[in-house]
Figure 1 (cartoon, rainbow, N blue to C red):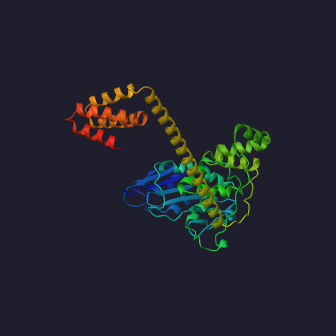
Figure 2: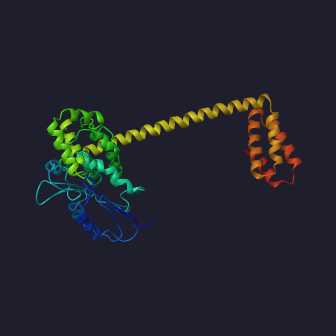
Figure 3: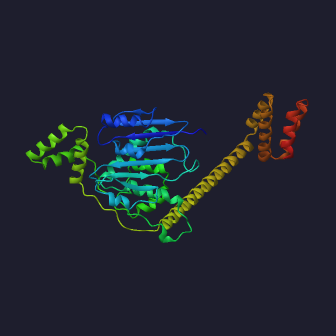
Length: 382
């Protein structure tokens, strides 16, 4: 299998200026670069750029995928990010870590699980990953830690099963794990999170409020604004149309929706993994039992059909006799085999005397057809 890598950076909050774009061109000579995206793919060689610096200079999201074990996902959050302390509770060694900026509250969230060439299955559409992960950036930016919790669960495959129970404790459990989300579903596939483990984890997760900003909710927010507030908001958007609309939507969501803080359940991840294994074992047993029942039903049905066929032959053997003669006329080994099988049915329905008489008739009529002779004699001997 040849090596393959996909590199992508994505600006979410605002486009890059010309100075930032100039810097991005120094990071790769072959990448496709504009104010919103940076993409490159490799079938040989490696990306030599500095992902962290590229995020600091304008991009908000970075994906590095390879078919030999790389599953990196970086998020950049600007100054004003309110949840750095919460993000830090999901850190694990260098595989999930928060790199704070030297000044301000912003930083870079790195999700970089360990992996080898045989750790993960290959992904066939990596070019859609960044687009699918944009909602995760938005979730974390408003304090929804589900992406980080899911990433933490992905690390469970590396935990020592013989370790002490309190060595690997569950991070805070965010609300909404029971609800499906396309971005989270893609992240689970990207990091190959155990779905049974996620189901076990979701048992301790509260339901989350639907935070879709539809026209009805936006209208609700508009009704709460007075004339001066509306004027100020419009001025913000018109003066900075590349950044303010997305920032305004986040502000509206923060005003309309209350965010549930993650629950501190602190379950043992090793015990959760054992529970997931037990769920998987029971499901496997149920599938095997269902398959066994299905095969038994087929066997009973085959027996019933066979009995009906034998009874039909006993009532009137002429159709099967004509079928035997017709098969012999085809002069092919496979047809001779079919005729021999019908002789066996004939014997089961009418007994050996009638069947042997028919067989002797065939043998004497076609003495030079050695293949036919062989198949008929095997049927009689059987």
